[in-house]
Image (tube, rainbow, N blue to C red; front, side):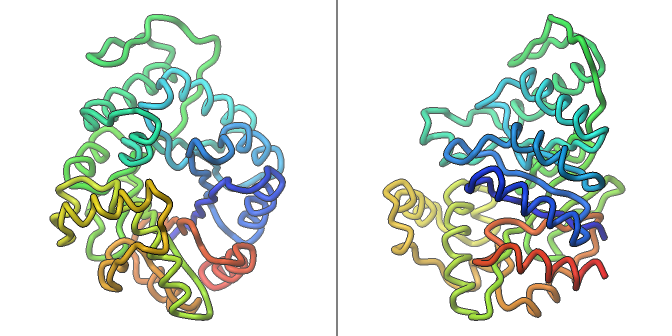
Length: 300
């Protein structure tokens, strides 16, 4: 099983670079940078990481076709592929509903947007034109590169779409039994919270899960046994910055996140039978130490 890490670019570029280089040295096969308007932009950071690493595949995990036109996404990731000598990968999904709403973007027709987003990006990579119901591309590119596209998915319909149009799937699950059976490349991306203090790890995980619940579709919430009103309540607390007031039970937290001591987390990761496990943010208080230890224990 290959090992990936999701790095949140909420620190200066040199700290992101340090964690990316450290991840490669620790045996991680993939380095994914998240995309969020209140953090550093992942593309210039990936360009820097491309020049500082030599083996790990690097990419955005994940972008969306609402805040950035797919033509620009294609141009950006092909540039990263050129700089990294063919090591770029692209993660794309419908985006976080709560985050999009906070900047005035309505996440409408997510399946249609993601499908056409992937199709137009792939057309551009082939040097072709594209005409869809939402997106069109009638221009031309002066360079083209083939970059693998991973579609991020959690709900049943998006999972089905990801398996249809993606080169691989970035599956947001926290339990091995939830992994979809397919011959396509499956990467499980799950938030991980490691701490010597179990309760502290749980508190860290609670906030992350709050964001996930607030942005989840009705189908996902129903499948996880979470009431719609509860999700709305959590979303409202997040919008007001009242993170400490979020109340989520331990079992519900485990539906979306892996947390605990290093030994406990390693054991849970090892139980997955997938092509890649992506250690998702927040990872823990001392990210560098945890990345080293996870690499040593999972890739030795």
